Image (cartoon, helix red, strand yellow):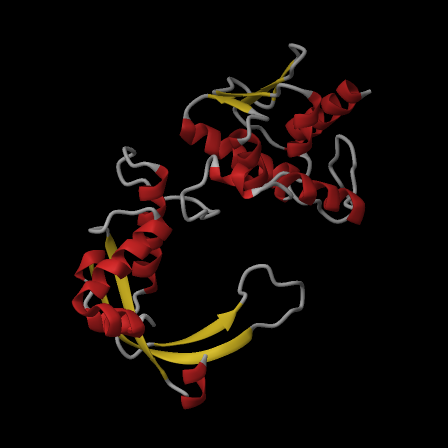
Length: 260
């Protein structure tokens, strides 16, 4: 029975180590993994027990974020408990696989999980992503920002962490994300950074518009080409015309790449 296997795991755990945590199951059963627990992990259903199998910090964090585990107690204690569980119930030592139940990966099961998670329309992702549809964490400086502002701050932070400066060389490549296993990067060009600057979007000049590839706008509209460019950019990015942007100007190092 499942409860017997849980009790066996808890008994083995307490024989080897101790943590100030109690695990409370959906049926009211409670297991203390040490004396005087300061943290309680509430397991709302049997399916959540899978997060304790080959547990690591990422897996336990996922369980908490997605609501499969509830945590009561000081955050510092909870982190120490998570580290202890990951050390003890983490990836199996040779000859010993800690397990409540075993479910091996298979192509069919993994394909089903991928379809469930990703085979949905952009309308679904638009419900909770920013207008750019950035599928990663955002950066909230004070917690008052909306998701679009927080994602813009994250992208700006990435640019700053790159610490690009004039003279740096970069390789432009095709399809960094979404490559298949073993698929190599396709190099498009080598470029050298000329300048990096922060400025309002509407500070763009006709020369900048031409450099962005809209020289025909400058030829046709002159100085008004900047208004046209800003309007196009804001319409695509859903931003204000005075939004701060990071402008990175580069030149191609190899002449053959000028056509890229």
